[in-house]
Length: 497
Image (cartoon, rainbow, N blue to C red; front, side):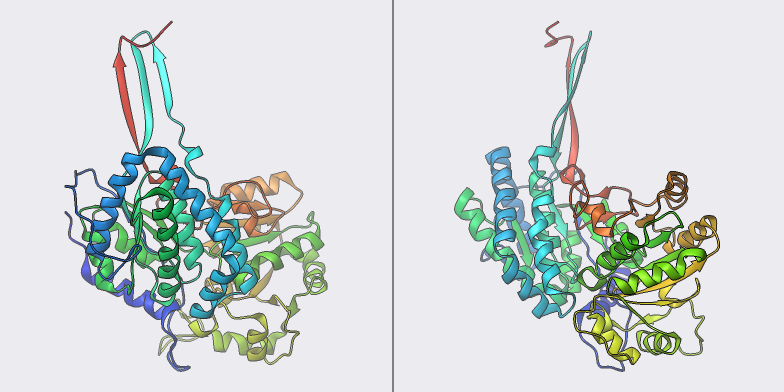
């Protein structure tokens, strides 16, 4: 068992806690970003472990949770695909039925985002694929047949973010259990109570309907030590990590396989062939969704200068509010601070976490402008080097940058995206422009003429996942992501023609 790099992980956990976790005083600002860690694999055999004591999957220590999850995995394995399908059905049914209450509970705990969108994020768990994705592949020839099947790892360790705590947990359960695994969650401390509540309720229903206890486990009070224990436990075969570069690096240094969903700073390009009204409405819908907490959310817009005024007028017509230069300066000053001794050009600005996920009206008040409470999004014109363009900020404000050509816009978008290869968006009716941007940015999600959510099936076609693995290349996760592929070969027999 490879040792966990404790210094690195401790630094990462402190960073996570400082970002979206504990509410600091007004003078104590730290970088804001949702971090999520999850699962690990290895090919060694794990000896059977007895189930530890816990109530409906909620445990005090990671070791207890991992032992219980391993025992649950063995039960799940014995009951077959039908039991997996039943768990998936339970999770999807419960998230839909409890969306209003659970969305309210999560918002009350985290105090970030919008209630209507938190409710919707739970209702659309039905878009997460289940056991139907796991079809075996077969080939046959003169020398017999070969069958390849998708089989589970065993126990998967997961860490969920405060930005989408119950939705990420629920979607991961669907994917992970559909693949035949049990799971242990180490939730973000700022959203640990609502996560534990959901785990209890899921396990009550799962035990009642299938007789299996603790398929889904969670550490009630997540800490650095519980994360370290989770990473080190022999039953945990896979890590699935969602968060910033530090979190991804920590997961990769545990010595176990990690599925890593890193940061994003999704750019938008609007060219002169686009429908400005549709583009404006899409940008508002995407950038304002849950107050821009989505990692796929529109974070900056590059627009051709000959249609820039028309595009920004369309934003105002559709309900967004424009900030003038002094108002933008006030908002920027309150949103970002810089290391002592550095000026506005500091490469490592510090984001005021107190503003993450807050309503547009809150940001407007800071900027010195009064807006209707229903206002969803603020915007302002900036240059391409503005801190709001360079830094991922999870709040309902978006900078607009004029560019002279599509080529300049694509290059600026590529710089702003930081080669994360996460998400990019274009509004255009020119297929060559779409193709050029797709090739240049090489992002996992590339949305054309729609809001960011269309990339995950909400308003577009396709399936949903709240874990998008960009650094390690798995992309939008699904049940196959959490499977091993096993090959069974019969030589010279069983081919019937």
